Amino acid sequence: MVAPVSCAGEGVIHFILNREVVHSSLPPATAALDYIRREKRLTGTKEACREGDCGACTILLGELKEDQVKYRPVCSCLLPLGDLAGKHLITIEGLNPEENEKGKGLNPIQQALADKGAIQCGFCTPGFVMAITGYFLNHPQLDYREAVNSVDGNICRCTGYSSIKRALAYLIEDFAPLLKTPGDHLTKLVDLGLVPRYLLTMTDRLRRLNKNFQRETAAGKIKSAVFVAGGTDLLVQQPELLIDKNIEFISGNRGMAGIFRRDDRVYIGSGVTAGELMESDLLREIFPRFPDYLKLVSSTLIRNRATVGGNILNASPIGDLSVMLLALDASLTLKSNSGGSRKLLLRDFFLDYKKVALHDDELIQQIDFAVSGKNGSRTGAVKRSNNRLPAGRQLNARQPLLFNFEKVSRRRHLDIAGVNSAISLKSDGEVLNEVHLSAGGVAPIPLHLSRSSKFLKGKRLSKELLAELLKICIEEILPITDVRGTAQYKRLLLQQLILAHFLVLFPNIITEELIGSMRKVK
Image (tube, rainbow, N blue to C red):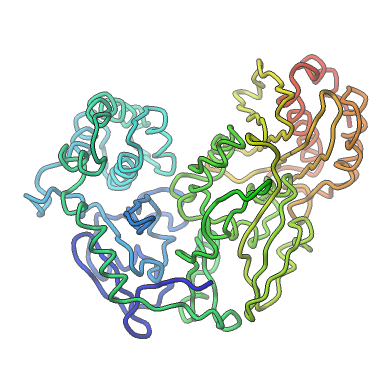
């Protein structure tokens, strides 16, 4: 499949920056942050960590989706200039009210932050404004907790966050009733002054821009081109290596987009972002707690760029999405330069540390996995506070596919895992069938625990079974001591996560008391 990319001549990138169409001949790997600040002198977008951790450089990125513009807050430090082709980039200056473009006067979001004492040094404030605006653009039904979650990738070192939360609470209370009224959501935001009026014209403007400057990416350039998806890891580790490279962006490639179900399998394009996974009604229907799992994967700003295919191809031993998909026994569709394709189980894709079974002329096109029934599974998500597990979950035996994901890191959110694990299984009461266990952080690769999975198949759940399982899983892994913990700590941690799977999925059989009695299992 080929993707439409806005371009009018080799090396020229066309997009809309705030209110104007712009053209750039800079290298496509140039960070959008550098273009904004150095070329356009729009210094409201701040430069700080350049790793996507602080949110000071947050902008809104608008892209035509199903014939309307969808805006996402993202980190401009990890946004390649070439991936802006045919899109709309909004900086803090682009949110100024039309009647006063020189920046005097505030919109309601900015005013609320000022009124509630949420601004001190002000360095982080533009990023917070952009993230909050992104939340309002994407959520017609406002919710305070979700609004707080929307700024999870923005750091403030002055306020302690309480004043920012007060501002959010005020905004929700003030505008939630007004946005519930019938009518177009964007129009209501404009009428309320929350976003500028020119956004109402952006769908037509982007449609014309893409029509005027449209070409197709060369599907035959896989060998010579560097293909970039979200770039959230690549652009942190080696941005300088991309500056003089021929880059092709998979953003917008229809063959690598979309989440859909066909018969008893779910298909996910490799270019789908973690944010799109989180918002998918289909995945939420199959896995009701899936959004909770995704909240443990980085921040909103990174999830809006990080892709499923990128997470897999990165081959990190602690890749959250890879570990989840391994537990679903997912398969990959690998598309070659010649147009052919082949299927490969994800568990066979990872060969060694950062080594994968991908040929030079191949790309990951799609990921798929099996589900059962109209509502294919019941899932649980463990939320911990001081290492306490939740209680009160009930087993629904009519839903045959069970799934759970566990992750432990130094911080609950915005951190990579020390150890993570996932499980899927089918169960007829207490008998376990078709079990798939996975783990990360305990081997050079994201690991499908094949021996442990095979051991469980067809067995009746019991304390003795779990005790034997913990011994087998320890024999399957090969953790190392590093900054995230000793090898012994990781072995013990994985055992606890595996026990947590069964506590979540079978609370009527596996109790906290039973788990407590197994704490000394080695």
